[in-house]
Image (tube, rainbow, N blue to C red; front, side, top):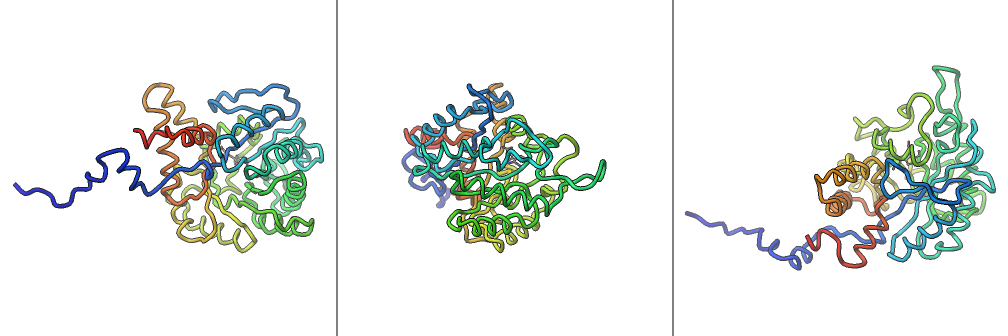
Length: 337
Ligand code: PBG
């Protein structure tokens, strides 16, 4: 009988040992909370497909932001749902548009304590639900790339003027980062950063979000602009293009099913890398936990640790406040489990 010399189990023997040697840690400051604010609401409205997520009124948004600050969440990503939608998404950059109103409230309330980010896309604002104005007719209608760039530039300026510190373009139009950078610089906002959704895939995992943001496309899908899940090299090409155009941070989305992409991007760049744990990822864990199959809190933390371990510096997650709260209290699942 021969006994092993190499005993990795020694370092797993107790919670303090495991904590000491853990290579990946979650910190509240690395988490970004996505929030939805809807025009005309006086009370928040629950989103059925996303447990715990609400469409906020301005007032409930303010409270959610204060709660996030109180547990040290790193940032907020703001999405708006306008009162009216039209062909060009004019609600996105209206002076009194819902996102502009929300950003002003949030900037005054929490702007010095966390990073205020604005998702920049038109799908919540267009009556057809696509991410920019359309060109072509009927079956050939598709998003007009360059007309969309003109709109994105206008929206970016409106969002920073209302208080956004970081603009996060998520429409996957060619040249969007460059168009936004030029517009921000020309408007005197050279100090505001761009978090590029560089590698954003055409994913079924966005389903619940489209309920929350009321942004499902009225026809077709987003495959002519978002990336094909089959592709990996293309993610690096998109990231490189965004960095050349002036992106300050880059993002991979979704996160969990795309950890290989997160790792490739993290290895390739020297800017901070974010990953977006999207609505479908959270809905799956919530659904499995609701039927009793998995330990919800541990599954949430494991999913976040995995995204960080793959190379993400920043994680956008609907559980940001909840997880930050547990981290602050020192009761996070991996440390105690
Ligand atoms: C806007 C946008 C989407 C998400 C973030 N920004 C939806 C989409 O592209 O259809 C999805 C986020 C999520 O699923 O949580 N374009």
